[in-house]
Length: 225
Image (cartoon, rainbow, N blue to C red):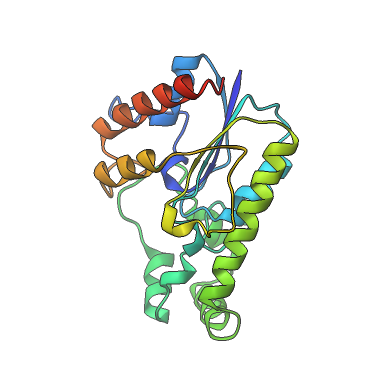
């Protein structure tokens, strides 16, 4: 059995413990005796999730798309994380983002950003010009919706059972995620167990257990695997 995880930070930590704590997605895979394919990254965008799904060679018995706020993020396809373009207000913000250290976390993805961009100046200029000339909140939501529609169609075509985590307010009315179930409860559990600069997925140690337990009960109730 194999479970695939796609999306943003809530599912981006896998394969190692920190202070004896595993990620909730690792706990889920251990419970089901499943191997894990994980293409989630910090601030992962909907478009990255679509690209990674289409490039997945493994046969998936279950897919998880944690995209609750992903309309905010723009893909940096040659890096191991994406950028919060929707909240970008000025050059100082992108400069701080580029140089942020914070709590040391494995697989943070920031090293790949510094390898891709020749300098802080190039990075800052790239997003300044993007926001000035190419940005539109409405267009960003349309791109998010388009990615969700294609993800749903792909999963339906290949009959892959799926759990989505997309906030209702970030799911346009014309987008139907009928290839699986969309869990607003898991989204709420993320919020209730949010703890920044603690563990790589920004959830508390106790929250890992709570979310894993609920996820397992949801999968078994819906008979997804």
